[in-house]
Image (cartoon, rainbow, N blue to C red; front, side, top):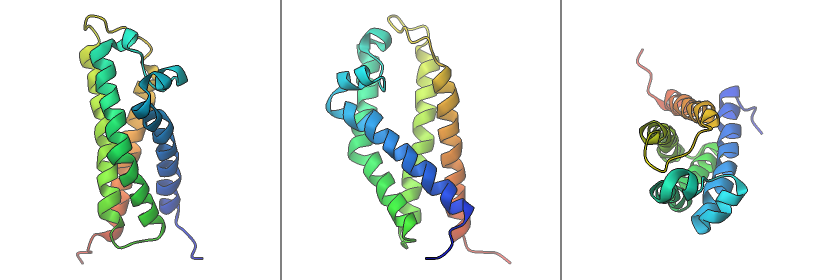
Length: 151
């Protein structure tokens, strides 16, 4: 088996960790949002309003039917160095950059909305930028490895 680069491992390990988290935190609530609330991976409507819960359920459902399968396919393709992996993994990484930005913008925009009582935002402001930064780096890393050289 060929020796893998640190760039390979810095993409694979966090990618699978994030995917595992997504399956638990988003995949399960797509079937039963209240179970996600009881697990602590989703916010209750009492804290973020019915509209907020519907919005976050929509993300959970979209993650289940599209994002998680694309991320898994991209990571497996990267693992096997499939010719198609940069496109598929690039799509998943684009989503991985996009959704933390949407979530943080929502937290800021909803801060003073009637019924919105989400007050402990520290975890969001720590984890979501790290996820987006990792995904941006990973997108660059897969592009840098496949871009044609201009000498």
